[in-house]
Image 1 (spheres, rainbow, N blue to C red):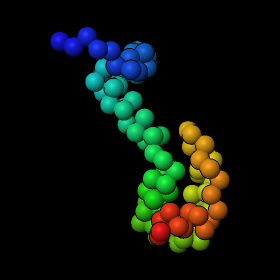
Image 2 (cartoon, rainbow, N blue to C red; image 1 turned 90 degrees about the vertical axis):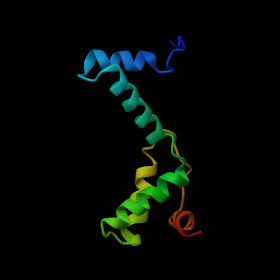
Image 3 (tube, one colour; image 1 turned 180 degrees about the vertical axis):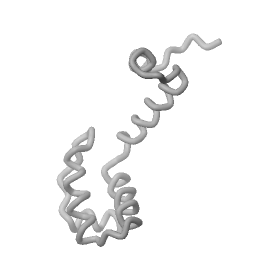
Image 4 (cartoon, rainbow, N blue to C red; image 1 turned 45 degrees about the vertical axis):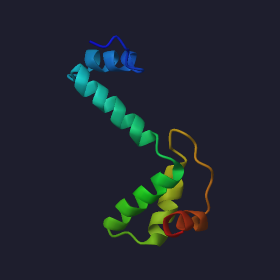
Length: 91
């Protein structure tokens, strides 16, 4: 049996005390949240563009929305112009 501690063991313990999640489920939730917020600005822009495009939004609707969303990311992304957002998606 491994004696290595999970780097977020305190958070996992908190989740198991305050939610109906078991330790394994709590560890997966923590991993998912970290992966979600670990995206770079470019990865986030590409993913969100694809999601919003799939909902039928146009680029004129998508890029201002993504620009506003970036300000709320865990790690502040650099301020990107609409043109820079388009370049991330289309090169």
